[in-house]
Image (tube, rainbow, N blue to C red; front, side):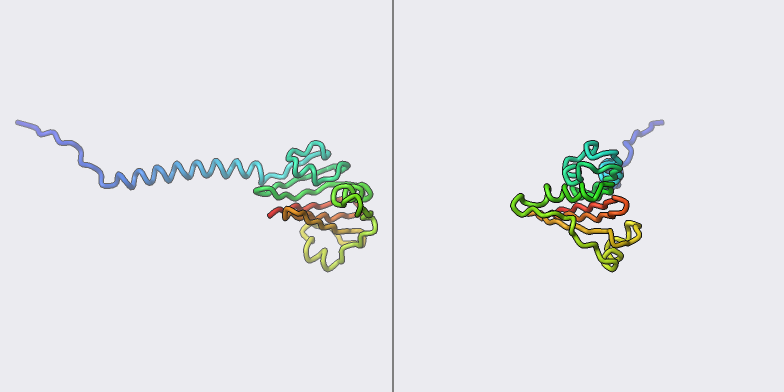
Length: 164
């Protein structure tokens, strides 16, 4: 008896198989990239003092005497920071960093933030409002904005840095 040898039939699903393999490989690459971005941007970093802060942009916007710093970077370049600093030192930093020399004036006479505004915009901080909480806002020519909320009783300061 004579046996015929036949080639296996060609699959009609070759295109679908290639598509599914490419989709799986793409999912793996996206997962790895997302994980790397999360590790860099999504994890709060804690520093004992300003000189320990890694990203130059974050370090430059934190007063030199700040301690107990938590920096939360956001994609691509924004960040939030929490730190402790003496009010006088914070004001000296503002005078040097945000004022032109000929326009320099002390921030010590800055009025406290109102209870309503604080509760509306900054209640997420978990701080109890009192008259010693102050808000400072600065705008840069490049479109950036800096907000500092400072509790003069404890020295705790919240800093929100945004660029667009």
